[in-house]
Length: 156
Image (tube, rainbow, N blue to C red):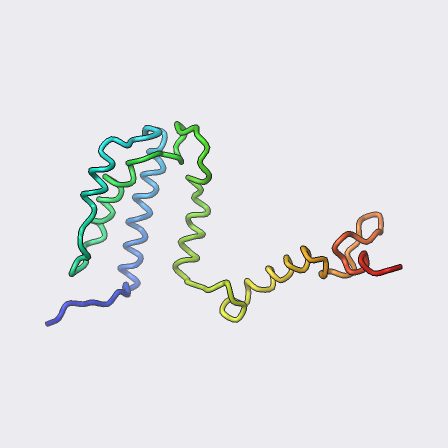
């Protein structure tokens, strides 16, 4: 009997993986006020200990989540915590993290209109507004044509 080498998860396995990761993430975020703003002690040794050849078989994701959340994630700068006061863009933007999860899970290629047509028109309208070619009848409350509308660029 050969080992299962598929990379696809069943619905049940995927749900369990996301729920296990979500529990760990929520616990981590709730612990931020108690964490130091930085912990770099032993970071180099930890990084070296993580270098290994590609595995021949998979490992349980619970084991990998343990490694990540108990040893790896806690090292370095805690930019999302309240004790970190230096300028680092990002950190702790959970709405964005969920959006990234959705975007990566559904895997829609939004760079090409045909692949994701609902994303194209909005970008096209933004391009039109920036170039001044869109919305020919756009007027201010006072009735004057606004910059960027076709009427504003036509000779009188």
